[in-house]
Length: 219
Image 1 (tube, rainbow, N blue to C red):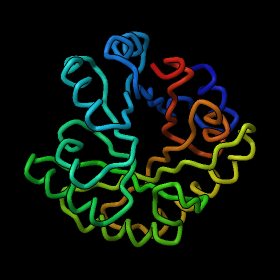
Image 2 (image 1 turned 180 degrees about the vertical axis):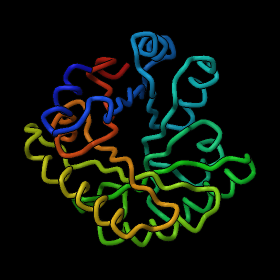
Image 3 (image 1 turned 90 degrees about the vertical axis):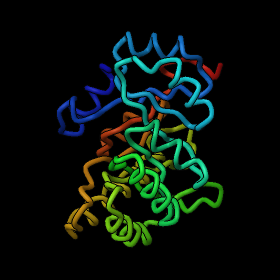
């Protein structure tokens, strides 16, 4: 947390403006419980099936659960049941399915739009040019609330090489925010992982997804 606070200050922001998402992929419930006891407030999961088992084992822990992996539409009902925030909405079809299940649950599901800022074919997400259109479309769904944007830059050994991708997402967020789309507040930027989260924070990240630095290597 000291590194997060220092990076926020370097970016001219208050430390509490950045939230840590402890990425628990492949790690058992006991490790998640220990992380929460050590101060983690948000648990990030990549896979629905794994998350369901852990959520049932840890239903009483005082933490939010965020979904940060690729989400298939046929898993939308489980995502709505389990997660406070879904970081990876990249199509109107997925948004509509989440909206349908959120309506059944009497819930407004908070989501982020995943943007493929690098244009890599292997990564999910809409292009930067499509993000505004998707935000407008999702804003029409009564049980969906768009809270911001998420990205995964290419992998680099040097976090400075990821910085331009983080800056691009911040500028896109500012562009969409300036349009004042009703129902879209653009408060969150989910970007940065163990190897590059400090650069991401300096460029405006509000949510950093850190796993290895908390849990160690994959279980």
